[in-house]
Image (cartoon, rainbow, N blue to C red; front, side):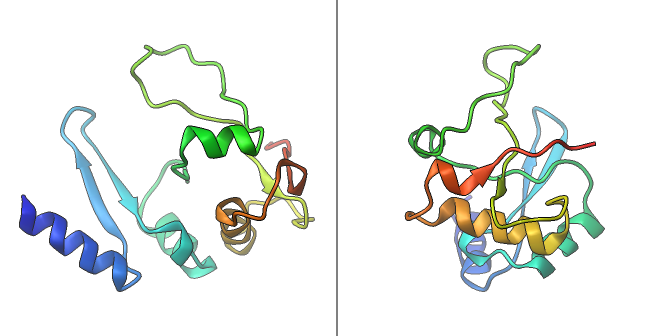
Length: 123
């Protein structure tokens, strides 16, 4: 297993995606460090994978940014999801790869505050 972790770290350093398999859920996730995200990364993920684009954050950062959890009909130990947000400067729908990458970079920027983000309706 150490070899797999070493290879994943090497891939992250090379700005490459890593596939994380979940035997319990029968799913796989693509992961890349948020600080490396570009519009091209989002486009690649959308092209080769399906599902949600998620950003893993510590609970303390979610609280700082006043991002609320979404109600869940699932069990307490399931993955918690939070309210989708966009950077305030994003004027379009926020779903383009460019907009998503920009929002991710804003969220991980320590200078970003709750007022720099907005919740937009997704139709």
